[in-house]
Image (cartoon, rainbow, N blue to C red; front, side, top):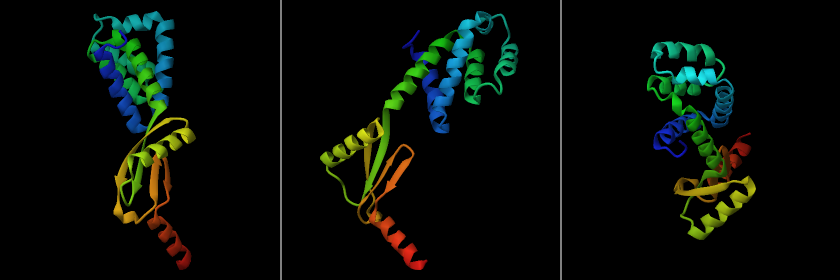
Length: 178
């Protein structure tokens, strides 16, 4: 069921929560281990898919099996799928999540903050150079903040390069005060 909108919805929700907690890779690793377990131990998948077993029993079993073995987001997803009788979708959701993570790795949003607006060609050249440096497809969002006086502040992922005039003046002030 790859491409199924329900699977995509669950995968995207999990992916967005993982991004917010900055654990995308950890979640993907846990999901791959879970997939391997479910495909090699068919009885676990059969148990999860069995609609004759009450939700509370499945919840306890999932917690006993996976608590402290997978990230809490993965466990929460498993419990949610179980509560909604959607366990048959687990393997497809894992594949959808992997596809989202793979796509995200190749794209990075960045931000360039300047005191005056930059023309589109300058923003494009900067994005291309940052893409070359990072090895990822950098998409730059331009912001104007007159308080930085001049220069630029560039943020890509967790990296920040502050080349603003304001920052340079602050450093000079710190050196004079020392």
